[in-house]
Image (cartoon, rainbow, N blue to C red; front, side):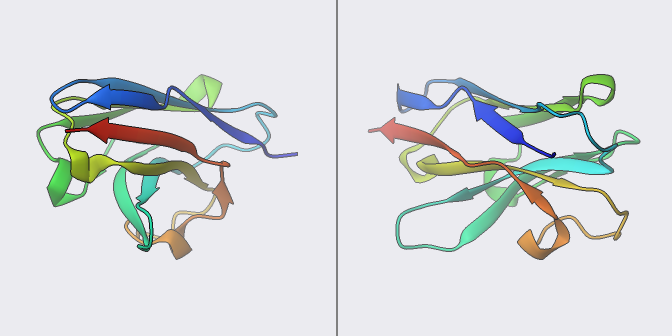
Length: 124
């Protein structure tokens, strides 16, 4: 059974850093792309970053230069290093994974497995 479990969220001051991690405890599938989305209160779930099995990376414009996505294919884990955090980065961060190469990475509909989410709060 697929179970994506996130960790690493918390409260941080603006300008600080956090590192999120996500692991598939069941190691059930080989995921083509693994990534992160976030949802701020009252807003839609938005794409943050993703990395494909082959190593290609994708970022939302709002996080380019500040966030870095990495993954360990053998362990089915994905990480998100977040630096220079801003109050706008506050939200629930969700790990996402896709088992088919759809050629699309930016929409929530492109991913078929999700974690439960971890809260990130950036205080100004």
